[in-house]
Amino acid sequence: MPFVPELRVGVLVSHNGSNLHEVHMAALEPGARFEVVAVISNNSGSRGLAYAKENRIPTRHLSGRTHPDPDELDEAIRATLEQESVDLVGTAGHMRKRGAAHAWAVCVSDHQCPPGPIAAPRR
Image (cartoon, rainbow, N blue to C red; front, side, top):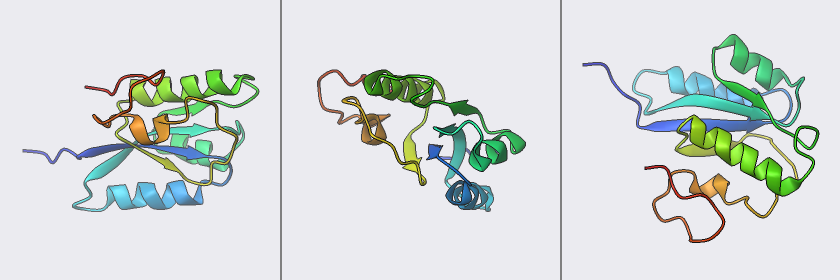
């Protein structure tokens, strides 16, 4: 029976993607219990997005240019992470002001998510 990774990891990157590269390489190691399933960048020309595309990892460019309102941007990030069934988010060098819904960073699939405007955890 093939091994199924326990965690689906999403990575947020801004530029070169060196942290993404290290996380992805670790995921490819025998016995790794996670896989990188999504990469989001606030920089459409980032090397991190190019690396992800080269390695057939789903990518999205989401930024203040695609979503000028910070809350709408957070919602787009959260929706993308949920769409890819991400369990854990790594903010590998991704730096930006976060909107009110920023709890996606700790609450994508955590069954202990606080009540409120944040989306319900993935079941």
